[in-house]
Structures are given as structure tokens and as C-alpha cells.
Image (cartoon, rainbow, N blue to C red; front, top):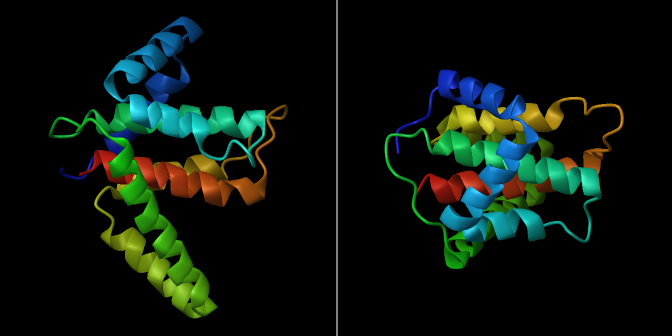
Length: 161
């Protein structure tokens, strides 16, 4: 799949951020039909470590990613459990590699990953969305953001196949 443009990412994010609740619920039902494994993954990962706000934020960002990736130049595959497991394993392996190196290695490797990532604008959206200051009544803990990033990157990797 060709890289998705910044314009598509921003337009989709704006549309999702102003979507009425009824339409959001319809979108969840559509995802349940079109990408059931992705929806279950988003609802299940982190359930032991995430609070309610973090779970909801992860689901929302996953839905936005799905909508962004639907704008790509080819039809999305129907993600399976095996595909999710494979992509998640790759991301965990990458994390382990980064954790084993020095801080300089970590920074250099991270830059290489970002610069060579097939969907840089989508990944950038995820990073920016996770780094945003949450609404006052919303509790997103800093220690949860890394996990959320890996789970969301896994979703992008699955859709980008």
C-alpha cells in the first residue's frame, strides 16, 4: 500500500473527532462485521493494565486508524488472529532489541524505524495523539502510552500488508 498522505490523516481525524455518538456506535458495528479480530484485539489488549479511560482511548484511536487506512490505494485485508499475533510478535521483538541496546542505539534505531516506516503519517498521528494532553476528566497514564503505541502500531502493520 502506498503511504497515506497527511491530508487524508488530518481529514479523517477531524471527521472522527466530530462524529455524533450514534454514528460512532454504527461504526463500531461496522468494524465488528468487517474487522472482527481487530475490534476484539483493541478491546482485549491491556485489559489487565489499562484503566477505563485508556481502554476507551485505545479503541477510539484504533477506530481512527482503521478509517484512515481504508482511504489507502488498495482494499484492506480482513485481519485474522494469526496476522495480529505475527505483527505483535514482530513489535515485541523490536522492543526487546531496543531495550537491550544503549540509549544512543535506542535513539538511532528509533529514528531509522520512523524514517523507513511504510505509513509515516499514520504512525506520526498515533504518536501525536498519545502525547496530547488528555481532557481534564480523562486519565491516560504515561506508563500506559508505550503499550498503547505498540498495540496501535500492530494494527497499522496488519492493515498495511
